[in-house]
Length: 188
Image 1: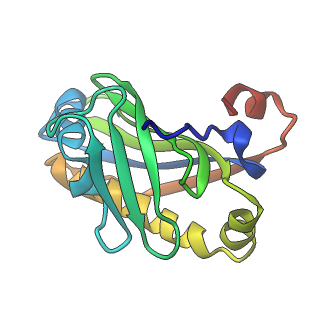
Image 2 (image 1 turned 45 degrees about the vertical axis):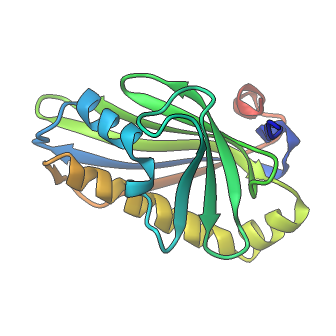
């Protein structure tokens, strides 16, 4: 049975837009080659101690729309995601009913001038419910695990590129008012 999707509109609390990105100089791989490597083994790039990805629906190799992953997250934060978009330079997950967040997260690789690229993880999400909002946002318990997971993911991608990181992973978080145009555009 197909698990119901959990878009941001079903969540609780503020809508957060988060970006984690790393700029890479002189990569040995093109953006398309690097994205293909990530799509062929998403679990490799996620730090096992913080978040273990297991494909539970779909082909062993690559990503296709409709594939699903079960994620064991440090602490009581396990969840599932479904692939909603796959292109040569990106893929996107949508959270499913049991995930602690409600929303979408996109992974992309883009050229950044000559002999450089940017790998970015960009999410739009709210907490699944009030309890998750309290423990994640108010107490900060899940937020630290999530940030470490995506920072380490970015660092592994930089290593796999064959180039060198221009600097540390950059993290940006924007809290959007529920009635803002940005929030309304990303809640479904």
